[in-house]
Length: 112
Image: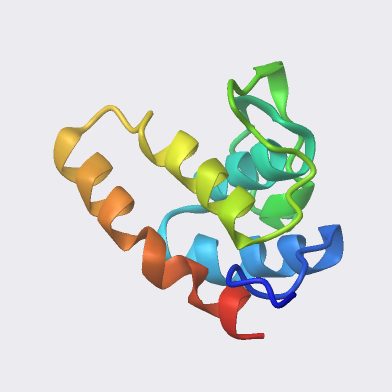
């Protein structure tokens, strides 16, 4: 059976996608949060550092991300992590823009 949610998403592929795609469209700190929600089912805050890739930013005050399917096995699970982080953006206009942009962010995971 062929998955409609693209090829499997492993940790290395997830890290590369977060560092390159999500960081370019959002910011490195929310990209790091997406990585942690998708890979470990945990959310928290990440320090303001630019000397390491976003997926390597340490998660602080980690708490379980309700509904997270971690580790993410496909683009659907990653979409849940994106939605989780985007829905917690405090500014409504930015929140809705990020939620609306999720399909575009997922394209590289679905096509490769």
